Length: 156
Image 1 (cartoon, rainbow, N blue to C red):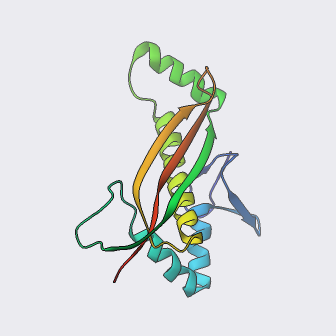
Image 2 (tube, rainbow, N blue to C red):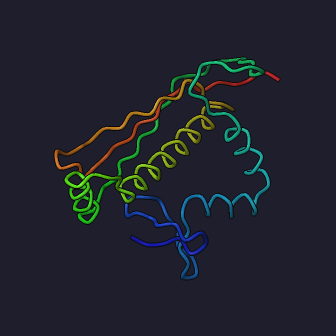
């Protein structure tokens, strides 16, 4: 487990990260750096970043073409300390901030992957997004998050 040298966010072992000149960058900081280097990336990512909906339609969003159903998957492991503290929280009650942070990181990662999938098929929006959480082991040490939605092109 390392920390991003730029934003200070914890980077988990299975999460993508990049190292250069002794500095480690998380996915978000790497993307920001790439946008600064190539303005074309910023334009492409702005298109797909602009629209991600859990509904099929929205006011002022004319859908010109439904391309295909897309999915993205992300599996996150909970380390032994998170498991231990989550077990204690089960007994005494309360919220487990460590588990919540892992779930939040998983959600951000899977939505980013879903946006990349949409961009690869030529979409500029994803509608009808659904998130499904699955516990992969009985002890709760592995959580998989699946995002699915419909990649669409909006009309201007």
